[in-house]
Every structure is written in structure tokens, then in C-alpha cells.
Length: 484
Length: 142
Image (tube, rainbow over all chains, first blue to last red; front, side):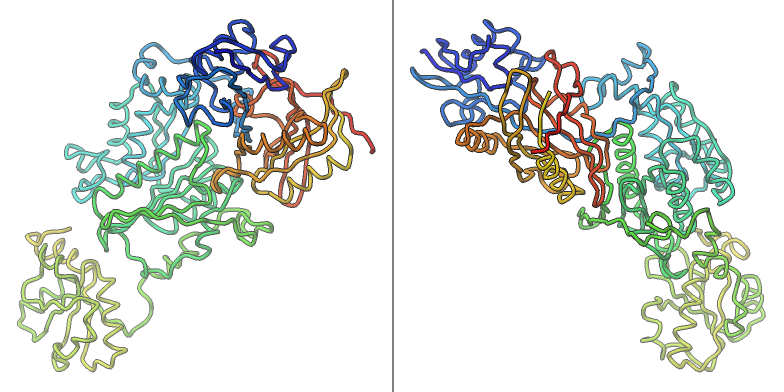
């Protein structure tokens, strides 16, 4: 069937200057094959190396895109016309590797990363970029565990880890980078061994110290990307500010109970953590995971998202979590997303920044003041050993446990009455004001709040806080009471 | 070489600033002459990419290009190239640009930032698709 192919103006020079060429074909694909057989120089502008029509090249048979018909198999009739029309796409890409020489991969590495290499989005170039990259992980806890393991497995060439903690039994429910055999070991050593086992081709640098305003800038300088796996506000603000001041992307994640958040804070390209949260919450308002609990798999999911975004940054991918806050709730199994905006008034990344060097973050978050007991004489306290002595003496006292029922199930101090914090005021009448009352929780924070609430509600009896809660009881009085 | 008037360049710059932080794009309509291309009109196009990708991708749908070509023919003109902006990035083509281009056409790229239009260059793809070459841009006063 003779069909007429219209040659687009810019390609006519590859078709002997002709604007229309007639070929005799059965299908649209055959027509293009015949066309490019006679005009070979045309072919590379229409087809890619895999001999597939380039994705921006559209072929119209009469007025219909052949992709909406049977593709190259679309039959043609006598007198049909074929038009070749590009869709115009393009755009800026972060080409940070320009002028940089990338390390070569050994045959062993090529085999190891083969599932990456066969995807054009990674490929040899991308894998070499991963090898050339360096990432600093703050913390090797719940988030740091999957981050470290996936980055190591992916072949990120140099991974730094910062931690000062020791592996404890209660870590193992979620911190899968550490194992039972590591109990009591320093976390950086346990993590280093695990990462080396996963991938011996990468470098691992350990920094055994708390991240502070004194060492953060020096540590960050040697890495391309910082991954925040911390569990407290002072360090989170410290990581953010140090990233802004050193121009590094901050791959953020946080978790609590069943909920997680993730984002990429990169001041050059979008909002930073302070644009989102200019001020920390009042100390004690947001409970820590130790206080509120966390589903073990949650940091696995959020940390894996952080690892994903880190790898995308290295590969120069699009659609990073920049200016996007991803919220995840594991219980209803829902993801939500919020748009973020850079705050022009942000004190650290705004137009007129007031924070030009790192500050005292404990003070900024009010933690220092919070941890040292206030000179507030109104809060009476008792230690676990004293309480035990008074009980043994047979003093007339009552102990109120303000934890949640499921915590009561795990461990309890004998002879206590359970009234969860949320009910303590409504059930105030169950507490005898004539008898001295000791209030306790897990660590002493919620019980102090309960005492405050009771006093405000007009409770007339004497209220004493058990310092260190049931944890102190287990440590100092009865190790038979389980710690959690 | 591509010839374009100062006033058309100003239109392109204004379009880029207006659409910041997203990419703007449009067609360059004119004539292929013996000594290069002459632009007579610009034809701004709404960016068809979804919101999230607009910042660093733009797309002129084939249907839109066909409409633009039709309009050009009605004015005895042809599509001689395209313009687009690179918000907060230099006015040089990316690898992505290279993969999605044809030779002969002019690709004008303008670097934009908040309220400001920066460098503007025109690029032409090498016939073997291997790279872009900067194209001489002749600014006329008409």
C-alpha cells in the first residue's frame, strides 16, 4: 500500500531535503523501517539504541497516534498519511558530577550490583556515583539500622556512623542492625561489623561521640549527605542547622508509636526543618519512644524511605521529598503528604538569617532546664529505696500507678492502684486524701504531670512523686520487676 | 545562527519569571533561511506536566505542537525551535534535554530565579545526537 510520510522540518536534512516520502508498506512500523532503510541518518533521531521508537517521538497515522492503535503493527491503507511529531520535553537536572571522575567498578562489584546496573535509571554511571558518594548517619538506632544496611548493600562508597550508645536488650525489637550477640557492645562497633558483613567493598567510618555543636560542622564537612536518625529535638535542630550552614541535604525521618514522618530538607532547594517547625515543642509535651512506645517495624519502613531518598539524591533523580512531608501511619496503613514551603523569615535558611553558627540546642529546646529538677518546692519526690524502706516499716501510704493498663500488664510494683494519667482527675475520688500518696509511672515524667493535674483540680492530700518510676524500682529495689 | 528581536527575548524572559519556580516553555515561529533561522513570533504554551514535576520538566504535547504548527502555517511561518526555562539552574542543556531533542531546531534556555531572568542561550543538537552546541544568537532591534 503506498503511504505518504511527512518529514518534520528539522529532519529533512537527513531525508535528502524532502518534506514528503512515499513508501509501499503494510503497517506503520514497516513504513518507518522502509523510510529509515533508504535514509539511514534519520533512524537515530526516531529510534533509540534498542530499536524502539524514542519516547518523545509520536507517529500519527492520519489523525491518530499509533500508540492508541496497534503501535508499529497498525495496518495502513492505500493513500494514508503518516506524520512524525515530537513531544517536547526537557528540563534542568542536577548535574553535580560534571567534571568529576568516578571510580571504576571491579568485576566482583559488577556482579554484586547487577540488579542495579540493568536498570537505566542507575546503570554503570549511577552505580559509580554511589561508589563515589559519602553519607553520614546520625544514630544507629531504629532508623539508622535500615538506612545503614540498605546504603551499604547499595554500594554507597563511604558511610560514616555517629553514636555513643551501647546495645541494650530493649533495642533489639527494632534496631535490626544489632543482634543478641552484640548486647553490651558499643553500637558503632556492632553496626560497623554488620555493614562490613553486608558489603566488604565499602568504607565505614565510626565516630563514637554524641553529636554536638562543637563537632557537627567538622564531621559534616567530610560527607555529601547527612541522614538524621535521631530521637530527640535538640539533635534534630542541631542536624538541621549544621546541614543548612554547610549546604548539605538532610534526609529526615522520625517515628513515634505507629506514626512516622520523612522528608528531605535541603535549604538550597527547599524548606528546612525550621521552616516546618520554627520552635521545638515544650519539653515533655511530645513523649519519646521510650515513654510512648514504637511499633518495631515502623522505623524499618521510615528508615527504608530515608535510604531510598538518599540513593535518589546520589543518582540525581527527580521527585525527591524536597518541600514534601510524608506522613505514614502504620495502624490504618495510610500515607499522606503535605506540601512544604521555604519560609523567607526562617532564622537559619531565610533571607535574613539570624542563626549564622551553631547554638546551644539543649537550651534552645528547654531540655537542660527541664532535666534538672526545678527549684519548684511544690513537687515532693521520693526515691525507690526510700519508698521501699517506708513500706517495710509499715507506714500508711498508698501508691497510684498512672501508666497505661498494657504497661501494668508488663510489670507492676505490688500493692499499687492503677489510674492512667488521662483519668487521674476524673477518678480523683478513688484516691484517699487522708493517706499520703506516692504517684509513679515508668520514668517519673507522667507521674509528675499527674501530681500537677491533681493539685490543679483541688486534690487536698499529700502527693509524692516516685523518682525514676518503676524503672528505678526495678534497678534499686526488686530486679524481679521487668524493665521495659 | 538564530536571529531574534529584543522584544521577543523580553517576552521569553517575562514568561520565565512569571512561571517561576516552574519551567515555562513555548514555540519559536519563524523561517529557515540560508544563513540560519529567523524568529518572527513566540508561541507560549501552558506546561502540561503535573504540578509536582513542573519544576524541572516541561512537556509540549504533540497535539499542542500540531496546533502551533497549524497556526504557524496560517502566518506563513514554521516552527524553528523551542524555548524553556531552568528555574534556579544554569541555562545549559541537561542530559535529559539532549535525549529529547532533534537537530536543526533551536533550543533557547533561560535561567530563572525568583523575580529574575538570568542567562539566556540558544543550543543546537549535533547531528549525531552526541551533544548540544551553543548557537550564535543574533539580537535584532526590530
